[in-house]
Amino acid sequence: MSDYSPGLAGVPATRSKVSYLDGTKGVLEYRGIRLETLADRSNFIETAYLLLFGNLPTPTQLEKFDKDLRVHRRIKYRITDLIKCLPDNGHPMDALQAAVAALGMFYPDKNVQDEQTQYLSAVRLIAKIPTIVAAYARLRRGDDQIQPRDDLNYTENFLYMLTEKVPDKVMSEILDTCLILHAEHTMNASTFSGLVTASTLADPYTVVSSAVGTLKGPLHGGANEKVLTMLKEIGSIDRVRPYIEAKVKAKQRIMGLGHREYKVKDPRAIILQRLAKRLFEHYGKSPLYEVAVEVEKVGEEYLASKKVYANVDFYSGILYQKMGIETDFFTPIFAMARVVGWLAHWIEQVKDNHIFRPTEIYEGEHDRAYVPLSERKG
Ligand code: ACO
Image 1 (tube, helix red, strand yellow):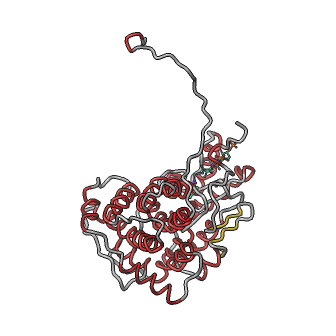
Image 2 (cartoon, protein in one colour):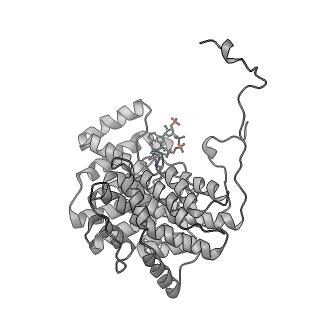
Image 3 (cartoon, rainbow, N blue to C red):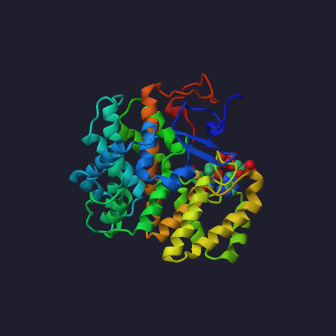
C-alpha cells in the first residue's frame, strides 16, 4: 500500500532522452537544449526534427524534412467528407481525434519499428493535423475547406487555411514560437496515454488519437480554453480579487494555475507573456491581458504557499484570441504542436518496447455469493 502514488506522481514511467524538466528551477530542455534558446533561435519545424531524431538537422536534412512536410499537407477527400459529416457544434478536439484515427485506415503502416515507416508516419501526422484542424474550423460554419499552399511555411500555411489570408511575419513568427513551447513536455498525461498505446505496437495514428483524447481534458490541454472563459467571466480588474477569494474559499481550481511538476512559474508562461506583449505592440492591447495579470498576482497571494503558479495555459489563450482564433480551437493548436512530442516518445518506446501493464491495489470483496435475480430486493 505504501508504494502507491495517486496519479503516479513521482513514479518514472520510462527512460527517455527527449526532454528534461526541473520543476524547482523552472528549467525545460528539448534534447538538452534550453527552451528559451529554441524559442529565440529556432523554428517549429527545426525543433520538431530535433525532438524526433535527437539532433538539430543539417541544412540538407532540414531542407528534406521541410519539403516532405509540405508535400504531405493535403488530406484525402474522404477525410474531408468525414469531417463534413461531424456535428458543427461538436468540440474540434473530437473532430481531430476522429480524423486522426481515420487517417490510420488510409496508411496501414505495417512495421512500426521500421525507421522509414516511422519517418513517413511522423511527417504525415505533423503535416496533416493542421489541415484537419483548419478544415473543421471552416466546414463547421459552412465555408469551403481551403487547400494548403506549398509555398508557405508551416505556420503561415496553417493561418492561411484557417483565415484565407496570408498572415504577416509578426503573427506567424509568434504562433510559430507558441508551437515550439507546446511541442514537448516530458511524461505528461497525453504523452503517457500515447506511450501506453504505443507499447501495444498499435499504429502511430492510433497512438496520436489516444493522446489527442487525453489532451482534451480541462485539467490538461483543455485548460487554455477554460482560462479565457474565466477571464471573460471576471471581466474587469476590480472583480479579480472577489473572484479568486470565492474560488479559494470554495476550494475550486483557478484555471491556468498550478502544475504537477513546476513549483515555480512555468518557463513557458514567462515566454508566452513576452510574446503577448510583442503581439499587443503590433495589433493593440487585449483588455483581458490586464485581467490575467491581476489574476496571476492575486492568485499568487493565495496559492504561492502551495507552490501554485501560472502554467503554459495561462497566457496562450489571450494570444490566440488576439490572433482571431476561436476559443475551442486553442487545444487543437496545442495538439498540432504536441504531436511532435508524442511521436518522439513513440519512436523511443517502440525501439525498446515493453508493454505497459501496471498492477493495482484491489480494495473490493472476495468470495461473494451469487444471489439469484428473483431473490434480490429493491
Ligand atoms: N487553483 C487552486 N488551487 C490549486 C490549483 C489551482 N489551479 N492547483 C492546485 N491547487 C491546490 C490544490 O487545491 C491543493 O491544495 P490542498 O493541498 O490544500 O488540497 C494543492 O494546490 C495541490 O494540488 P494537487 O491537485 O495535489 O496538484 P496536482 O499536481 O495533482 O495538480 C493540476 C496539478 C491538475 C495541473 C492542478 O494544478 C490544476 O487542476 N490546475 C488547474 C488546471 C490547469 O490549469 N491545468 C493545466 C496544467 S498544464 C497542462 O496540462 C498543459
